[in-house]
Length: 411
Image (cartoon, rainbow, N blue to C red):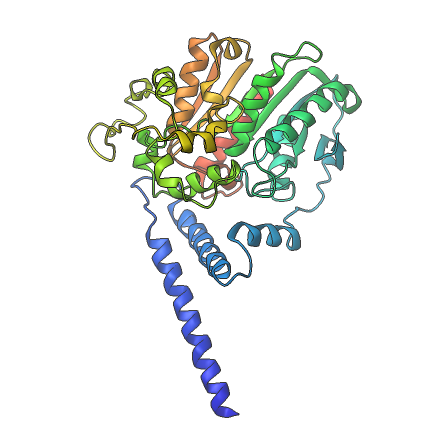
Protein backbone atom coordinates (compact mmCIF):
# COMPACT_ATOMS: atom_id res chain seq x y z
CA UNK A 1 0.00 0.00 0.00
CA UNK A 2 2.76 2.42 0.96
CA UNK A 3 4.61 1.57 -2.23
CA UNK A 4 1.57 2.36 -4.37
CA UNK A 5 1.08 5.67 -2.59
CA UNK A 6 4.73 6.50 -3.13
CA UNK A 7 4.52 5.71 -6.82
CA UNK A 8 1.37 7.79 -7.15
CA UNK A 9 3.02 10.65 -5.25
CA UNK A 10 6.08 10.57 -7.52
CA UNK A 11 3.83 10.45 -10.60
CA UNK A 12 1.81 13.40 -9.35
CA UNK A 13 4.99 15.35 -8.61
CA UNK A 14 6.36 14.66 -12.09
CA UNK A 15 3.08 15.76 -13.69
CA UNK A 16 3.13 18.94 -11.65
CA UNK A 17 6.73 19.66 -12.62
CA UNK A 18 5.98 19.02 -16.27
CA UNK A 19 2.94 21.31 -16.12
CA UNK A 20 4.83 24.17 -14.53
CA UNK A 21 7.76 23.58 -16.87
CA UNK A 22 5.42 23.92 -19.82
CA UNK A 23 3.94 27.08 -18.28
CA UNK A 24 7.44 28.51 -17.89
CA UNK A 25 8.24 27.78 -21.54
CA UNK A 26 4.92 29.26 -22.64
CA UNK A 27 5.35 32.43 -20.61
CA UNK A 28 8.92 32.86 -21.92
CA UNK A 29 7.53 33.27 -25.44
CA UNK A 30 6.22 36.68 -24.49
CA UNK A 31 8.12 39.90 -25.10
CA UNK A 32 7.83 43.08 -23.02
CA UNK A 33 9.15 46.07 -24.97
CA UNK A 34 11.04 48.73 -23.00
CA UNK A 35 8.63 51.34 -21.70
CA UNK A 36 5.49 49.22 -21.88
CA UNK A 37 2.92 50.23 -19.27
CA UNK A 38 2.19 48.23 -16.10
CA UNK A 39 4.92 45.71 -16.94
CA UNK A 40 4.87 43.95 -13.55
CA UNK A 41 1.08 43.58 -13.56
CA UNK A 42 1.13 42.51 -17.20
CA UNK A 43 3.72 39.81 -16.53
CA UNK A 44 1.73 38.44 -13.59
CA UNK A 45 -1.50 38.33 -15.58
CA UNK A 46 0.17 36.68 -18.55
CA UNK A 47 1.66 33.96 -16.32
CA UNK A 48 -1.86 33.13 -15.15
CA UNK A 49 -3.13 33.08 -18.73
CA UNK A 50 -0.17 30.88 -19.74
CA UNK A 51 -1.04 28.41 -16.98
CA UNK A 52 -4.67 28.29 -18.14
CA UNK A 53 -3.58 27.85 -21.75
CA UNK A 54 -1.21 24.97 -20.98
CA UNK A 55 -3.73 23.30 -18.69
CA UNK A 56 -6.54 23.55 -21.22
CA UNK A 57 -4.38 22.25 -24.09
CA UNK A 58 -3.32 19.33 -21.90
CA UNK A 59 -6.95 18.53 -21.16
CA UNK A 60 -7.73 18.77 -24.87
CA UNK A 61 -4.92 16.30 -25.64
CA UNK A 62 -6.52 13.76 -23.29
CA UNK A 63 -9.96 14.35 -24.78
CA UNK A 64 -11.40 15.92 -21.62
CA UNK A 65 -12.47 19.20 -23.21
CA UNK A 66 -11.28 21.77 -25.70
CA UNK A 67 -9.30 24.84 -24.75
CA UNK A 68 -12.20 27.20 -25.44
CA UNK A 69 -14.64 24.75 -23.86
CA UNK A 70 -12.74 24.90 -20.57
CA UNK A 71 -12.94 28.68 -20.49
CA UNK A 72 -16.66 28.57 -21.23
CA UNK A 73 -17.23 26.11 -18.38
CA UNK A 74 -15.20 28.17 -15.95
CA UNK A 75 -17.14 31.29 -16.93
CA UNK A 76 -20.39 29.42 -16.30
CA UNK A 77 -19.49 27.95 -12.91
CA UNK A 78 -17.44 30.89 -11.62
CA UNK A 79 -19.32 34.05 -12.66
CA UNK A 80 -17.44 37.31 -12.16
CA UNK A 81 -20.41 39.64 -11.67
CA UNK A 82 -19.59 42.44 -9.25
CA UNK A 83 -21.77 43.33 -6.29
CA UNK A 84 -24.82 45.52 -6.89
CA UNK A 85 -23.89 49.18 -7.14
CA UNK A 86 -26.12 51.49 -5.09
CA UNK A 87 -25.65 54.22 -7.70
CA UNK A 88 -27.12 52.13 -10.52
CA UNK A 89 -30.32 50.36 -11.49
CA UNK A 90 -29.21 47.12 -13.16
CA UNK A 91 -31.52 44.67 -14.88
CA UNK A 92 -31.06 41.59 -17.06
CA UNK A 93 -33.41 41.50 -20.04
CA UNK A 94 -33.73 40.01 -23.51
CA UNK A 95 -33.98 42.08 -26.68
CA UNK A 96 -35.57 39.88 -29.35
CA UNK A 97 -34.04 36.82 -27.69
CA UNK A 98 -30.59 38.38 -27.19
CA UNK A 99 -29.55 38.63 -23.51
CA UNK A 100 -28.62 42.12 -22.37
CA UNK A 101 -27.84 43.86 -19.10
CA UNK A 102 -29.09 47.42 -18.73
CA UNK A 103 -27.35 49.94 -16.45
CA UNK A 104 -29.22 53.13 -15.49
CA UNK A 105 -27.81 55.81 -13.15
CA UNK A 106 -30.02 56.40 -10.11
CA UNK A 107 -29.33 60.12 -9.94
CA UNK A 108 -32.06 62.22 -11.58
CA UNK A 109 -31.55 63.58 -15.09
CA UNK A 110 -32.85 66.91 -16.41
CA UNK A 111 -33.94 65.22 -19.64
CA UNK A 112 -33.51 62.08 -21.69
CA UNK A 113 -30.08 60.52 -21.29
CA UNK A 114 -27.66 59.28 -23.90
CA UNK A 115 -27.55 55.55 -24.51
CA UNK A 116 -24.53 53.33 -25.08
CA UNK A 117 -24.69 49.92 -26.75
CA UNK A 118 -21.66 48.05 -25.45
CA UNK A 119 -20.21 44.95 -27.14
CA UNK A 120 -17.57 43.16 -25.09
CA UNK A 121 -14.24 41.84 -26.31
CA UNK A 122 -12.81 38.35 -26.12
CA UNK A 123 -11.84 37.37 -29.65
CA UNK A 124 -15.43 36.33 -30.46
CA UNK A 125 -14.86 33.24 -28.30
CA UNK A 126 -14.59 34.59 -24.73
CA UNK A 127 -16.31 37.20 -22.61
CA UNK A 128 -19.79 37.59 -21.18
CA UNK A 129 -22.05 40.02 -19.34
CA UNK A 130 -20.64 39.12 -15.92
CA UNK A 131 -16.99 39.53 -16.88
CA UNK A 132 -17.68 43.04 -18.16
CA UNK A 133 -20.13 43.95 -15.42
CA UNK A 134 -17.85 46.19 -13.39
CA UNK A 135 -16.44 48.00 -16.42
CA UNK A 136 -19.89 48.65 -17.93
CA UNK A 137 -21.23 49.91 -14.62
CA UNK A 138 -18.26 52.25 -14.33
CA UNK A 139 -18.87 53.76 -17.78
CA UNK A 140 -22.59 54.17 -17.07
CA UNK A 141 -21.90 56.05 -13.82
CA UNK A 142 -18.99 58.16 -15.03
CA UNK A 143 -20.63 59.21 -18.30
CA UNK A 144 -24.17 59.43 -16.90
CA UNK A 145 -25.58 57.21 -19.65
CA UNK A 146 -27.94 54.28 -19.91
CA UNK A 147 -25.67 51.45 -21.02
CA UNK A 148 -26.86 48.24 -22.64
CA UNK A 149 -24.29 45.43 -22.50
CA UNK A 150 -25.03 42.82 -25.16
CA UNK A 151 -24.43 39.12 -24.46
CA UNK A 152 -23.96 37.94 -28.01
CA UNK A 153 -23.38 34.29 -28.97
CA UNK A 154 -19.80 33.02 -29.05
CA UNK A 155 -17.75 30.80 -31.35
CA UNK A 156 -17.10 27.98 -31.94
CA UNK A 157 -20.66 26.97 -31.02
CA UNK A 158 -22.01 29.94 -32.96
CA UNK A 159 -19.98 31.02 -35.95
CA UNK A 160 -19.92 34.29 -37.91
CA UNK A 161 -22.23 36.08 -38.46
CA UNK A 162 -24.02 35.05 -35.23
CA UNK A 163 -22.25 37.62 -33.03
CA UNK A 164 -22.85 40.40 -35.54
CA UNK A 165 -26.50 39.46 -35.99
CA UNK A 166 -27.10 39.39 -32.22
CA UNK A 167 -25.51 42.81 -31.75
CA UNK A 168 -27.45 44.27 -34.67
CA UNK A 169 -30.73 42.77 -33.43
CA UNK A 170 -30.22 44.12 -29.90
CA UNK A 171 -29.22 47.54 -31.27
CA UNK A 172 -32.31 47.88 -33.46
CA UNK A 173 -34.55 46.85 -30.57
CA UNK A 174 -32.95 49.40 -28.25
CA UNK A 175 -33.20 52.21 -30.79
CA UNK A 176 -36.90 51.45 -31.21
CA UNK A 177 -37.56 51.32 -27.46
CA UNK A 178 -35.02 53.86 -26.20
CA UNK A 179 -37.67 56.17 -24.76
CA UNK A 180 -38.82 53.36 -22.46
CA UNK A 181 -35.38 53.59 -20.81
CA UNK A 182 -35.33 57.37 -20.63
CA UNK A 183 -32.96 57.59 -23.60
CA UNK A 184 -33.15 59.96 -26.54
CA UNK A 185 -33.18 57.56 -29.55
CA UNK A 186 -31.09 60.07 -31.52
CA UNK A 187 -28.38 60.00 -28.84
CA UNK A 188 -27.28 56.36 -28.90
CA UNK A 189 -23.59 55.42 -29.21
CA UNK A 190 -22.17 52.06 -30.28
CA UNK A 191 -19.10 51.01 -28.28
CA UNK A 192 -16.82 48.01 -27.90
CA UNK A 193 -13.30 46.80 -27.22
CA UNK A 194 -11.23 44.42 -29.37
CA UNK A 195 -13.72 41.99 -30.97
CA UNK A 196 -16.42 44.26 -29.56
CA UNK A 197 -14.80 47.16 -31.42
CA UNK A 198 -15.23 45.14 -34.61
CA UNK A 199 -18.91 44.63 -33.78
CA UNK A 200 -19.40 48.32 -32.91
CA UNK A 201 -17.96 49.30 -36.30
CA UNK A 202 -19.92 46.68 -38.24
CA UNK A 203 -23.21 47.46 -36.47
CA UNK A 204 -22.74 51.19 -37.08
CA UNK A 205 -22.21 50.54 -40.78
CA UNK A 206 -25.41 48.47 -40.89
CA UNK A 207 -27.50 50.98 -38.91
CA UNK A 208 -26.66 54.08 -40.92
CA UNK A 209 -28.26 52.66 -44.05
CA UNK A 210 -31.64 52.08 -42.37
CA UNK A 211 -34.49 54.56 -42.76
CA UNK A 212 -36.81 53.20 -40.04
CA UNK A 213 -34.68 54.04 -36.98
CA UNK A 214 -32.42 56.92 -35.92
CA UNK A 215 -28.76 56.69 -36.85
CA UNK A 216 -26.21 56.27 -34.05
CA UNK A 217 -24.92 59.50 -32.54
CA UNK A 218 -21.34 58.20 -32.49
CA UNK A 219 -19.21 55.06 -32.48
CA UNK A 220 -16.46 54.19 -29.99
CA UNK A 221 -13.87 51.59 -30.99
CA UNK A 222 -11.29 50.53 -28.40
CA UNK A 223 -8.24 48.76 -29.92
CA UNK A 224 -10.61 47.12 -32.42
CA UNK A 225 -9.99 44.22 -34.79
CA UNK A 226 -11.09 45.63 -38.12
CA UNK A 227 -9.77 43.32 -40.83
CA UNK A 228 -8.91 39.67 -41.44
CA UNK A 229 -6.94 40.15 -44.63
CA UNK A 230 -3.37 41.24 -43.85
CA UNK A 231 -1.71 39.75 -40.78
CA UNK A 232 1.69 41.20 -41.67
CA UNK A 233 1.09 44.87 -41.03
CA UNK A 234 3.97 46.41 -39.05
CA UNK A 235 2.11 46.13 -35.74
CA UNK A 236 1.42 42.43 -36.34
CA UNK A 237 5.12 41.84 -36.91
CA UNK A 238 6.54 44.11 -34.22
CA UNK A 239 4.12 43.08 -31.48
CA UNK A 240 3.63 39.44 -32.44
CA UNK A 241 4.81 38.24 -29.01
CA UNK A 242 3.54 41.10 -26.82
CA UNK A 243 0.79 40.20 -24.32
CA UNK A 244 -2.07 40.20 -23.93
CA UNK A 245 -2.73 39.38 -27.60
CA UNK A 246 -0.01 37.47 -29.43
CA UNK A 247 -0.30 37.23 -33.20
CA UNK A 248 -0.77 33.45 -33.22
CA UNK A 249 -3.59 33.72 -30.68
CA UNK A 250 -5.26 36.54 -32.61
CA UNK A 251 -5.18 34.41 -35.74
CA UNK A 252 -6.58 31.42 -33.83
CA UNK A 253 -9.49 33.43 -32.43
CA UNK A 254 -10.38 34.99 -35.76
CA UNK A 255 -10.23 31.67 -37.61
CA UNK A 256 -12.38 30.10 -34.90
CA UNK A 257 -14.93 32.87 -35.45
CA UNK A 258 -15.31 31.87 -39.10
CA UNK A 259 -15.24 28.12 -38.47
CA UNK A 260 -11.57 27.34 -39.18
CA UNK A 261 -10.18 27.13 -35.66
CA UNK A 262 -8.31 23.87 -36.28
CA UNK A 263 -5.40 26.05 -37.52
CA UNK A 264 -4.86 23.79 -40.54
CA UNK A 265 -5.03 26.88 -42.71
CA UNK A 266 -3.36 29.36 -40.37
CA UNK A 267 0.01 29.49 -42.14
CA UNK A 268 -1.60 30.06 -45.53
CA UNK A 269 -3.87 32.76 -44.09
CA UNK A 270 -0.88 34.41 -42.45
CA UNK A 271 0.75 34.55 -45.87
CA UNK A 272 -2.40 35.98 -47.49
CA UNK A 273 -3.25 33.09 -49.79
CA UNK A 274 -6.97 33.53 -49.06
CA UNK A 275 -7.12 36.93 -50.78
CA UNK A 276 -7.87 36.97 -54.56
CA UNK A 277 -5.65 39.13 -56.81
CA UNK A 278 -8.41 41.62 -57.68
CA UNK A 279 -9.28 42.03 -54.01
CA UNK A 280 -5.61 42.56 -53.14
CA UNK A 281 -5.43 45.35 -55.69
CA UNK A 282 -8.63 46.97 -54.42
CA UNK A 283 -7.66 46.79 -50.74
CA UNK A 284 -3.97 47.63 -51.15
CA UNK A 285 -4.62 51.38 -51.00
CA UNK A 286 -6.54 50.95 -47.73
CA UNK A 287 -4.01 48.62 -46.09
CA UNK A 288 -0.92 50.52 -47.16
CA UNK A 289 1.91 50.95 -44.67
CA UNK A 290 2.36 54.45 -46.08
CA UNK A 291 -0.72 55.57 -44.15
CA UNK A 292 0.81 54.70 -40.76
CA UNK A 293 2.31 57.85 -39.19
CA UNK A 294 6.03 57.69 -38.54
CA UNK A 295 5.55 59.14 -35.04
CA UNK A 296 3.41 56.14 -34.04
CA UNK A 297 5.87 53.46 -35.05
CA UNK A 298 8.99 55.39 -35.92
CA UNK A 299 11.16 52.33 -35.57
CA UNK A 300 9.17 50.22 -38.04
CA UNK A 301 11.39 51.10 -40.96
CA UNK A 302 14.48 50.10 -39.04
CA UNK A 303 13.64 47.09 -36.90
CA UNK A 304 10.88 44.57 -36.28
CA UNK A 305 9.26 44.99 -39.69
CA UNK A 306 9.90 43.38 -43.05
CA UNK A 307 7.74 44.35 -46.05
CA UNK A 308 5.60 41.35 -46.92
CA UNK A 309 4.34 40.15 -50.28
CA UNK A 310 1.27 37.92 -50.18
CA UNK A 311 1.72 34.33 -51.30
CA UNK A 312 0.11 32.81 -54.37
CA UNK A 313 -3.69 32.84 -54.35
CA UNK A 314 -5.36 29.60 -53.23
CA UNK A 315 -8.90 29.40 -54.61
CA UNK A 316 -9.89 26.52 -52.32
CA UNK A 317 -8.74 28.48 -49.28
CA UNK A 318 -10.65 31.51 -50.52
CA UNK A 319 -13.85 29.46 -50.79
CA UNK A 320 -13.43 28.38 -47.17
CA UNK A 321 -12.74 31.89 -45.89
CA UNK A 322 -14.39 34.33 -48.29
CA UNK A 323 -16.63 35.58 -45.46
CA UNK A 324 -13.66 37.42 -43.94
CA UNK A 325 -13.76 39.83 -46.89
CA UNK A 326 -17.31 40.95 -46.02
CA UNK A 327 -17.56 44.37 -44.37
CA UNK A 328 -19.54 42.92 -41.44
CA UNK A 329 -16.47 40.80 -40.71
CA UNK A 330 -13.77 43.26 -41.83
CA UNK A 331 -15.28 46.77 -41.43
CA UNK A 332 -12.06 48.42 -42.58
CA UNK A 333 -12.74 47.42 -46.19
CA UNK A 334 -16.32 48.69 -46.45
CA UNK A 335 -17.11 50.77 -49.51
CA UNK A 336 -16.72 54.53 -49.39
CA UNK A 337 -20.47 55.00 -49.79
CA UNK A 338 -21.13 53.26 -46.47
CA UNK A 339 -18.32 55.05 -44.62
CA UNK A 340 -19.54 58.50 -45.67
CA UNK A 341 -22.74 57.95 -43.70
CA UNK A 342 -21.02 57.09 -40.42
CA UNK A 343 -21.28 59.34 -37.36
CA UNK A 344 -18.45 60.98 -35.47
CA UNK A 345 -16.05 58.36 -34.22
CA UNK A 346 -13.60 57.62 -31.43
CA UNK A 347 -10.64 55.30 -31.90
CA UNK A 348 -8.25 54.18 -29.16
CA UNK A 349 -5.05 52.45 -30.24
CA UNK A 350 -2.05 51.17 -28.30
CA UNK A 351 1.55 51.20 -29.48
CA UNK A 352 2.35 47.64 -28.35
CA UNK A 353 -0.71 45.96 -29.86
CA UNK A 354 -0.94 43.76 -32.95
CA UNK A 355 -4.18 45.57 -33.84
CA UNK A 356 -2.63 49.03 -33.69
CA UNK A 357 -2.23 49.61 -37.41
CA UNK A 358 -5.69 48.57 -38.55
CA UNK A 359 -7.15 51.07 -36.11
CA UNK A 360 -4.92 53.77 -37.59
CA UNK A 361 -5.80 52.73 -41.14
CA UNK A 362 -9.52 52.84 -40.34
CA UNK A 363 -9.05 56.33 -38.94
CA UNK A 364 -7.52 57.33 -42.28
CA UNK A 365 -10.40 55.80 -44.23
CA UNK A 366 -13.01 57.54 -42.07
CA UNK A 367 -11.31 60.91 -42.35
CA UNK A 368 -10.92 60.52 -46.13
CA UNK A 369 -14.70 60.09 -46.24
CA UNK A 370 -15.45 63.18 -44.19
CA UNK A 371 -16.06 61.51 -40.84
CA UNK A 372 -14.87 63.37 -37.73
CA UNK A 373 -12.50 61.13 -35.74
CA UNK A 374 -11.19 61.58 -32.22
CA UNK A 375 -8.03 59.47 -32.01
CA UNK A 376 -6.41 58.61 -28.70
CA UNK A 377 -3.12 56.75 -29.05
CA UNK A 378 -1.44 55.39 -25.92
CA UNK A 379 2.30 55.22 -26.57
CA UNK A 380 3.04 52.76 -23.77
CA UNK A 381 -0.23 50.83 -24.12
CA UNK A 382 -0.89 47.17 -24.92
CA UNK A 383 -3.93 45.17 -25.96
CA UNK A 384 -6.34 44.79 -23.07
CA UNK A 385 -5.10 47.91 -21.30
CA UNK A 386 -8.62 49.03 -20.42
CA UNK A 387 -8.99 46.12 -17.98
CA UNK A 388 -6.47 47.98 -15.76
CA UNK A 389 -8.63 51.11 -15.58
CA UNK A 390 -9.21 50.74 -11.81
CA UNK A 391 -5.63 50.00 -10.78
CA UNK A 392 -3.81 53.05 -9.41
CA UNK A 393 -0.46 51.57 -10.43
CA UNK A 394 -1.48 51.61 -14.11
CA UNK A 395 -1.81 55.27 -15.03
CA UNK A 396 -2.21 54.44 -18.71
CA UNK A 397 -5.28 52.29 -18.05
CA UNK A 398 -6.85 55.10 -16.03
CA UNK A 399 -6.00 57.55 -18.80
CA UNK A 400 -7.63 55.31 -21.41
CA UNK A 401 -10.88 55.14 -19.43
CA UNK A 402 -10.88 58.90 -18.83
CA UNK A 403 -10.51 59.51 -22.55
CA UNK A 404 -13.39 57.17 -23.46
CA UNK A 405 -15.74 58.57 -20.84
CA UNK A 406 -14.84 62.13 -21.88
CA UNK A 407 -15.74 61.44 -25.51
CA UNK A 408 -19.07 59.82 -24.59
CA UNK A 409 -20.02 62.74 -22.35
CA UNK A 410 -19.15 65.32 -25.01
CA UNK A 411 -20.59 63.47 -28.02
